[in-house]
Amino acid sequence: MWRIMDKKALLHTVEWIVALAACGWLVWKMATYDDYAGLWAALRSMDTARVCALLICIALMPVNMSIEAWKWRTLMNGDASLNGENDERMSWREAHRQVYYSKLAGLITPWRLGEYPARAMLQGEWKNTLSMGAVGSVTMTIAIVMAGVIGLMASPAVFDLLGGSYLYTLLAVIIVLGLIFAFAPCALKRFAQVNHTLMLRSTVQSLVRLACWCVQLYLVLFALGATFNFQFSIFNLPVYYLLVTISPSVPIAEVGVRGAWAIAVFGTMNAALAGVLLWVINTLLPCVGWFFLRKTLKG
Image (tube, rainbow, N blue to C red; front, side):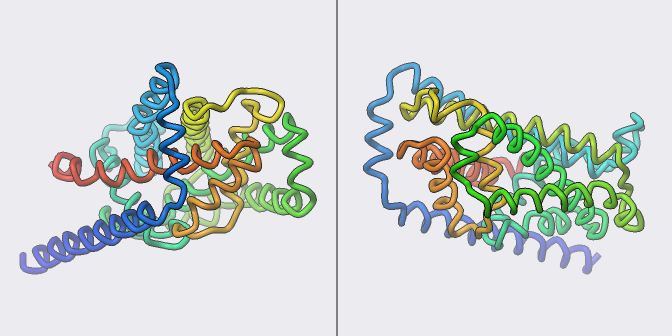
């Protein structure tokens, strides 16, 4: 009993350390952002239609998180979720709790590497959780690369802008992901119930989540005054996420990376503000929401 209490107390302490550290980093990042004047000017100039677009984008944040919880629950339930069995290990409530909490942990670790260890700590099952986390990351990247390549093929202006170096990097990413998809089930077989069917289903779920991201990005760009033309097409939306994904960065520089690629892909300074605003919606709001949801999700 004493060991169980110690474990619960330790977990509770770690949760709060991660939460406070992440929130402290968020406060610092928002305090040091240097273009609030441009952001407020863009927000003040919005008409009713653009305000509604921004509100819809914000309303899609919990949908985005629910899609991730759906994908995570599918991975953690493994074969049971595919066969319709009733002995599934993870409930919807637990899947949402782990997703929201890991969002915080990802903020204070390079390349968001803390997300899946945080879920493993909550799950209490490290090998299977980390293995499924690897599958989730790979299938999300596969979805982004697939959609991004299609977008590049339909966006010759962006394709020419990138030049050879990024195209070579993209080719290497495609080859590596193909090999991982082919051999991951065999490599992870001793740690988790992974097969090609589960990976394919996770990839489809990742495509659904990417579609949600693209809709949100479109809504924010529209809210900030962007119009669709030769430089700004629907196909550029997944290209933006592709470039952000294959660009090495750490959380402390993520806002700058997103803003820079938004300007390059969409050709307008308001696109940088859109990148920042979308980061706030999909990163800051879930972290704040965790404080209000943690008691409910634990119950």
